[in-house]
Amino acid sequence: MRVALIDVPSYVKCRQNCEAQLTASRCWKFARRIEKVSDDELFAKGHRACAGCGAAIAMRLILKATGRNVIISQSTGCMEVVSSQYPQTAWRVPWIHVAFENAAAVASGIEAAIKALGKKGIKVLAIGGDGGTVDIGLQALSGAVERGHDFTYICYDNEAYMNTGVQRSGATPYGASTTTSPPGALSIGNETPKKDMPSIMIAHRAKYVATACVSFPLDFMEKVRKAVSTKGPAYIHVLTPCPIGWGFPSEKTIEIGRLAVDTGMWILYEAEDGNIRITYKPNRRKHVREYLKTQKRFKHLSEVEIEKIDQDIEKRWKKLLG
Image (cartoon, rainbow, N blue to C red; front, side, top):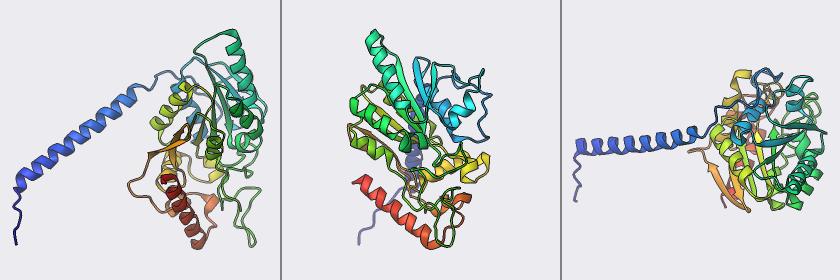
């Protein structure tokens, strides 16, 4: 038997050099990404959002990505209520409060007016919560995307109607407890799966569709930049953990969002002209139990139900990966 001889000190030194080069390369890439982050704070402090509000973090990151040359149409919801009490506003860009159901319709009109006036370089953004997007505002959003308006729609998803008392929405995950889907002897909590809004937008042939999470800020901002620079309709669905509605300490928002992604409960990807690319894949997916156990809304779930959720996640991963 022939045994390969290894010069251990040389091997260790070579490996250390390679790891150092790889680390340096990653740091350089990270530094280049950081350089693109604006110092401007266009979503002002002093708003009334709850401590640890994931949606407020999303608004700040969105405006860091778009810059000042943007007009925003925003539906009624948490972010409208906490940011625009007359005569004060947290918005340092042109911003319009519209009805619960018509943020996309108003954005369509703004985009058409800009085009008619011959103005260039103005970004048009519509923002809505999950209730105002996947439920109440779905018809207006569907029409705007089908007509091909050049605008970006961003749904901040805290997975229930949080502003009005934590009622379930079409984006509430299976098994979650809300005030309108309480668990009990005959109910698991919310009995329907979360509506897959990004896939619905891909089916509408939106030019650019992406998922994001506020716990991955650089990924989110890069997707916003890509969306607003895309010609035609673009859609981003960002997960925004809610301490009050989900039942976790306010200082855990970023940690909870990371767990959502690392367990596969929320998958980060983008689709350009329908072609899907995973933008973050955990080295080893954590069991969904690690995510569910951090929140009061899931505390009633049995081990059997948790295993079912984990199996559904595995199926979703395999489907996305082809």
